[in-house]
Image (tube, rainbow, N blue to C red; front, side, top):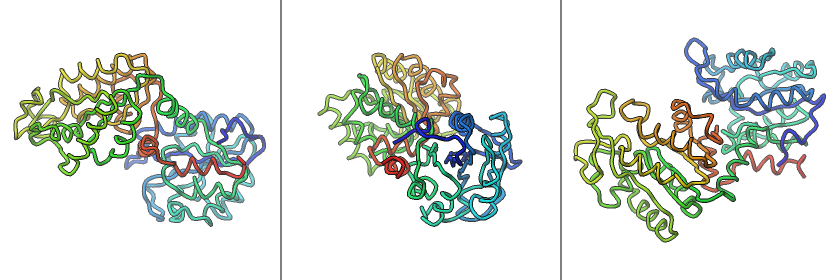
Length: 397
């Protein structure tokens, strides 16, 4: 797979697939521009090389219908501010009018196309729609790692119609850091898995147990493991149909000499609300009408000690309901421990990313992945269609 700095961009029409799927309030204000900022390096590089840059993205789930709330117009305004130059906005992404406007672009110009998903053919990976997009450019750059696990016309089929295809810096970094962590990592390799459901991460658990030295399981999903070991978990979230799988994972860990850590105490409440009475309880003494909503202080110490000697740490999923203040300490304290561990640290998943930023430690994390679903599928060992398409592109053979 080529990267953007390995192809000639000068005087070329360059279509960059980005992920500008950002939250926009009812007044049309972008409430979090992290995803826009993540692409600035790739965009600036292309502009600096004299390319005529077109940016293509989706926003929301309009399912082929044009809606005002899913328009990328506010993104063009914010990108202009961040990039320090005007970013023109087109009210469509294909068609004769778009082709005419693109034809009039000058070197260094930047243009944002309207929402790809206003065309139903985008999510269907339609070859005809992909060919229309391809006609706009000489070079195709994919920088949207976050959607690379979904085959769409703008990240998969399009590579059949553009001779020169390459990865942007963001997508390249995602793959390189993942390979550092899971391909040939410095050991000990520690994996922290949290979140609500074991069922969401079956593939990840089954795959990583073959690679890691230490596996830490927290969040609501830990209670499925604890119940599988015979503990009372009260009203804590627990997937009864996943108990055998949890036992199997624990047996595999034991057979492979993987150190598997589960919570030994919990911050509990009767309701998952900020004003509920909260108290610490050992795992052995969980009341039947209470639920665990965060790891407790003894578990924080245990988990922090478990990562102390780590050389590589990969983390996906929070360790508690951190969005509620009484149940945020476990996740935030582990963020601090990971950030100051001295290990290569990679964090993936939207909630975990949010927790890292809220804890004020983002600058100390080696890499924060932009792709939740794509990150998980990489951990599962799956082939990402968007990445596979770049590797197979005609311009790379």
